[in-house]
Image (cartoon, rainbow, N blue to C red):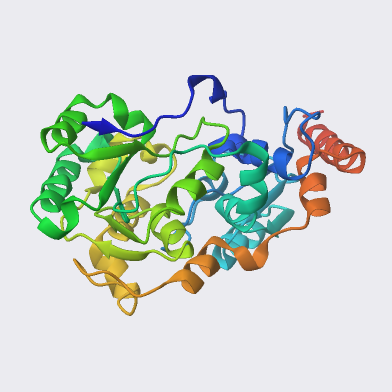
Length: 331
């Protein structure tokens, strides 16, 4: 077994809103020199994560169960913008790129501020393997580990990336230990430097292998990785998504569509020019950077005002919120 790195326990935070997730509010505070202003409250929502499929017909999938239509809601895709603004009547919808794009675009500055958050891996490790979240796909993860170690070419090159919560999954860890695999702690929504650490981690690799769909594909592509989709994906059923509380927000038809969107069949039908099963792609860096929204990054002044971290932004947000709450008070 070789567990290469886990972030320090003291750097985990209590999440209060979407902007806190994966340490985005802390990243912005570091970038803009506002460390003295503890990011105790953010007055906007910010869409996290890359979506490779069309917008579902429910705002919860974009911004969670937020009902305050006068808040600023920052999204990355045109379809999500249209859904919120024109189908659900949210007043202040803005383009802003994904949070990962801000860590990616400011990597050198952030590295100077916080230093290295991950160890330097030997140069022989040129491939990261993103395992699926094992709360529902531990057998799929174990099959991928086995596939890697059946390949003489790959077994000595790979570092497995394990989602933080899965470090407590004994079945997964036992499978990694069985092969003597090297693995590293992946993302945690509650780690305040997570986005910075993720960029530092990905910078050390040239290739990425996965058998699950998710934001890691766009993130790795933006870093210039050549990406392989392993054919060992297990299709998740509508019932599985329903058991994970998706049924709180989506009706049966939407759950069925969501299950379809999470299949290789859907993904490869729409991205067949970029990806092939069990083969490394070409360099997809330009495509990846477009997907994360590097072309839609907001200015420092815009961000601080939307967050309510300036006097103008705070007063503006407070005023809109008070007016909204007064408007819904029954006489």
